[in-house]
Length: 244
Image 1 (spheres, helix red, strand yellow):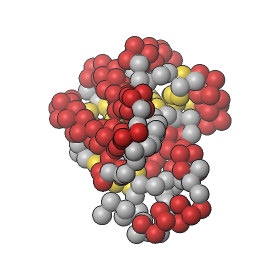
Image 2 (cartoon, rainbow, N blue to C red; image 1 turned 135 degrees about the vertical axis):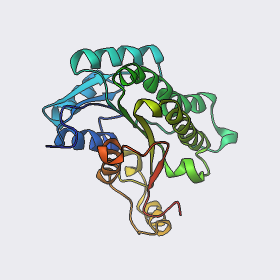
Image 3 (cartoon, helix red, strand yellow; image 1 turned 120 degrees about the horizontal axis):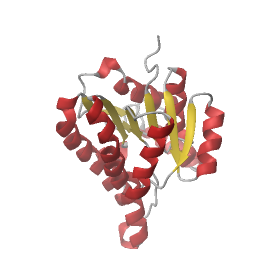
Image 4 (spheres, rainbow, N blue to C red; image 1 turned 120 degrees about the vertical axis):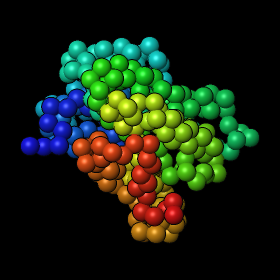
């Protein structure tokens, strides 16, 4: 018996990096997984690579109407979403005085507003069945800030406040809402960093190394499991001690 036998899981930003590691872990543990990316072809290809039990869906999760359609498609194909992992995110870094309006809006829409839309859409099935697990992926940047990332930090900090508030709204229905706050993780987002930048980052991390997507996925799976059934509104930092 695996932890997630038969459970329906939706992972946004599930085609690569942390999201893909989450999808792969849930598949290994018996779940039916929907991975969502912006493009249909990319999502379907990732699902085929992840393996049997995984289905790909394309959706712009910053569009509330598109999110409603996504959940209807997932429910028709797999069943009502029981576990939701909000992982999708983008960056448009720069000093605030030079930051373009559309870079502010795009980061807030994709990294924060999308969680309002997905959680609202998931609520219909979760409230009906009196069960649900929601894990929102924030960041150490949302806890401590970072020069040149005011838009990203605001979105990730907002996601924490949103999660705590929503957790209070749905706790009586056996729905938990928690946050995982990764530190620096080896993903496509950090792959472009120079060796010099990476060495400086490692010096700031007490454990002396960046984390891996699987280490984040393990934390997500714990919060989605029965072992965490009495945990809600919590923020779990997985950052090698960076946020201490």
